[in-house]
Amino acid sequence: MAIDRNFLRNVALFRDLEPDEFESVARLFHERGFSKSQVIFTEEETGEYMYVVRSGRVKVSRWLPSGRELILACRGAGETFGELSLIDGKTLPATVTALVPTTILSLHRSRFVELLGRPPFARALLRELSGRFRSAWRQIEILTHHQAEARLRMALHLMCRNKGEPCAEGVRIEPPLTHRELAGVAGVSRETVTRVLGQLADRGLVRLDARRIVVPDPELLLEGEVFD
Image (cartoon, rainbow, N blue to C red; front, side, top):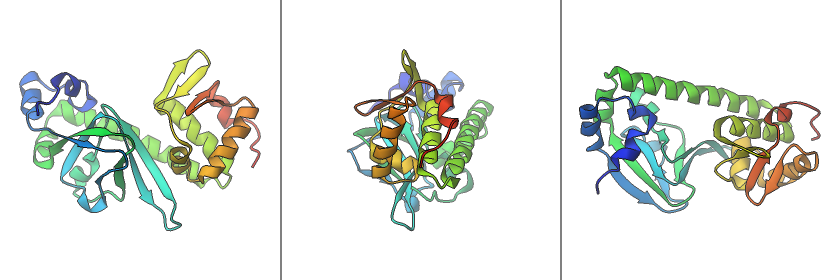
């Protein structure tokens, strides 16, 4: 199956490659489809490929000793994952699963290692990983809070910064999240998410429209008293 060059050219890691080099890389990608809830890879299977989400959405998660799933990240169309394992050769302590029907492009580590020697690719990769490390630190801050409401408010604030879409009512979190997915990000139960979102809506800190969450002023999520 021919890879969509226009799509791949707009992926941040490949945007600055010279035309001939980009073409040589694009030919080496393989495309595969996954159904909703299908596992793309587990921890033991990482370290061989880097991946680009062509369409759909995936979650990167791990199971805690308590039996609760912790969602480390979600990736949508045009976003990549798996690069870190190719750099240090170690496995990622997480499982990647399709949240919706998803198409993935994959590139073998041998070509990835060659690309590391190309300054445009290396710079783009450093920018990407730097952003992820900052997000990881913010998630650590979320998980250090004992109060469920504080965790959820900080998680929503982070999503507004990373995935927020400005709208007339404020900032809309995209793509839509289920309460279970939001619970996985904040490290709380689904029932807690439902309860706390209702409380935040009552206080005007969020607006709920089916599965969509709109935040009138994201900064207010980090201010004021926490009722938990």
